[in-house]
Every structure is written in C-alpha cells, then in structure tokens.
Length: 397
Ligand code: F2R
Ligand code: MG
Ligand code: MG
Ligand code: MG
Image (cartoon, rainbow, N blue to C red; front, side, top):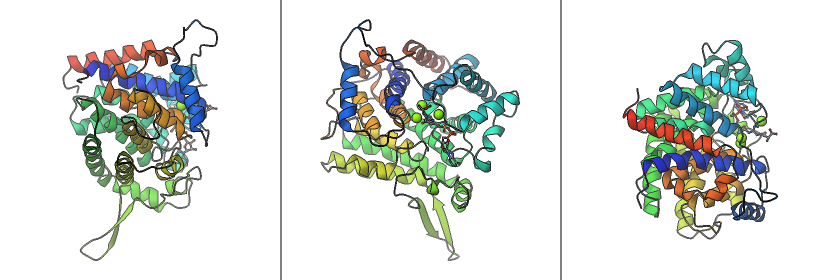
C-alpha cells in the first residue's frame, strides 16, 4: 500500500488532534487501568449520530493550541519567523488561557508580550533560574515544522526546529526532545509504505538513533552544564516527578588518550536504544508489564520522559501484540498504548499519534473519532495548506 503525501500530512495533523482531545481526560492520572481505557475508546468508537443525546465533543488543549499557532505562522509568513510565532503563542494564550498550559510556560508568554516580541528567545532563557524549561511543550507542537521541512536539508530542519523550541524551552533536554519528535515525524512522512515487520522497525529506529547521536555529540557543553548542576531543581535526574529508574544511565564514560575520564551524554539516543530493545523483545513474544515500560521510558511532562515513550507507542501500535487494543487501525492501537501509560496522556498520545498518522495516512484515522474532536476541519485545512506550500516551494528557504 502506497500512501499519498497529502494523506500523510492530514494523518499527522489530525492524529495529533484526536489524541490530544481523547487523551486529555486521563492527563495527570498516575494509574490508568487498561479496562478504563478500553471502555472509554469503545464508547468513542461506537457508531452514533452526532445529534444523539450524550454525543461527546472533546476539547483540545495547549498541545493543539500551540501546534495551530506554528502552522498558521508558517502558512501565512511562508517562512520561519520566531517573532511572529511568539506573538501567536501569547495572543492565543490570552484569548483562551484555560487550555491546560504548563505551569511555567505562561510566564514566558507574559514576558514576550511585555517586550513586544523583540528578542523572542530571551524570556525562555530566564526560566528555572536560567536553566530553561525541559518540559515537553516544545516537542508536542513540532508537527508543522516536520511537514514544512519535508524537503529541507537536514541541518536547516534541525536549526528551524531548535529555534521553534527555544521560544519557550531553552533547556537542552527541552529543545533536543523537540528535535527528536520532529525527526520521528519527518522520517514517518518519508516512509513509503506501512511499517509491517521487525526489520522495518529496526531500520526506522537505527536511522533515528544515528541522527540523534550526532546531534547529542554536538550538545555536550549544554548537557554537561545540566548534569553537573546538582543543587537546583533544574537537574533532570533529580526531578521529583520522575518515576523511572534511569538517573545516570545516560552517561557514558570515555577514557581519552591522556588517561582522563570524559563524560559523554547521549540521553535521548540511549533511550531510543532501550525502545529498540523492548520492541524487539516484544515482537519476538516477550511480555513487558506497563509499569515496567513506564519505569524505563517515563510518562511525565519532561521531554526526556515522554518523547521516547511516544515513539515507542507509535511503533508498537503498528503491530497486533498480546496486549494490543482490539482494533484494525494502528493509530487507535497507538492511542490506546499512550493513554494506558498514564501521566501525560494527552501529550504522549498526541506526539505518538502524529507519528502514526504520518506513517499510515488519514485513512487510518476512524472518521467517528474525528467527529468527537473540536477543530478537526481547521486542522485538516492547515495540513492541506502546508502540503501545498511544500509542493509549490520544493525547498523552502
Ligand atoms: N500542564 C499540563 N497539565 C497539567 C494541568 C492540566 C489540567 N488539565 C489543568 O489545567 O488543570 N499540560 C501541558 O503541560 C505540558 C507541557 O508543558 P510545557 O509547555 O513544557 O510547560 P513548562 O511550564 O515549561 O514545563 C512543565 C513543567 O515541567 C517542570 N519543569 C520544566 N523545566 C524544569 C526545570 N528546568 N526544572 C524543574 N522543573 C522543570 C515544571 O514542573 C514545569 O511546570 C504538557 O503535558 C501539556 O499538555
Ligand atoms: Mg495539553
Ligand atoms: Mg497547566
Ligand atoms: Mg499534557
């Protein structure tokens, strides 16, 4: 099956939307039971008229609000314009502040507005005592960058994505998480048929690991600054929200030829290797309980403990395994896994389903789920506009 690029753009945009809307009722719940997720999804998938009593329209959250702002800006400006994006973020927030934004990012919006959007990277740098946010708020909105950059040279795409992130997230974990999510979508858009075999999964992940490794080797100064800091809340290993056992496991000690120890930090690449290991074992028939996966990959609002989790959910959803939700669509299975992890369900779901939608196209998104979501017509239009922009401008500046 060959899926058209337009279908992939729509799948990416609307996949992100449905999972934001359907995932948000579970956001923040630490222990979600698979029974409750199954019941919820069965109810949303039931064929019923939108006019029937009790038909639920679910609201989108900050994930979609910020994705919309980036899409609108790229479409209207026909280029990446950080001041314009900053302005759209702030105005959108002021118009509808109750979309469940991150607790701290809202201070960036206020500071951006106060400075009339001059120096759009400065307010974010002042967050968290100068360490910047490592939340997943930059990764969750990166879909339009991946689509806009479909034909871009890799280095240009990376620069654009990093800069789109830095408007709110200046911490290396925040912007590298956004870069990883962008590359995951970008690769998914470039995959020419569905992912069917363990071989396909390993090709996809090896590509991602190779690219991420190079990026992380260039990020050593920023990583060591974060990891040497043990006194402030900014140290990601000391994050109290964390429920994983991976503090320190992303440090590689290298002995150089002067016999000195040198620490090399490749946290996201290391997590991707774990994703690969778990998926290989699962596809070969080994079973992992959900709490073990969550302990290993994470499920919280930090980019480090949510972006690799989303990539895992997207890839696992391509298969029908012993613990899959019984549905023919990979995007529905991905949504089910994402919500079952608990924690940041709207965001992990939204990132995972935008990858899945980019692989499988809009045909994989059940129409009935779209009807449950606020704003799906607008999101579809943005996907089409971005598609036309990419087609008319084979390599955007
Ligand atoms: N905020 C939420 N969900 C909770 C409330 C939703 C609920 N429905 C309600 O409104 O009642 N969800 C959204 O936030 C996440 C994205 O967050 P973003 O944009 O990254 O925000 P922020 O504030 O920059 O970071 C989030 C938190 O992470 C911790 N943190 C980040 N950097 C830190 C650092 N350097 N040191 C210490 N802590 C750091 C802080 O606790 C931040 O508040 C998405 O889930 C989206 O859906
Ligand atoms: Mg949200
Ligand atoms: Mg909030
Ligand atoms: Mg969230």
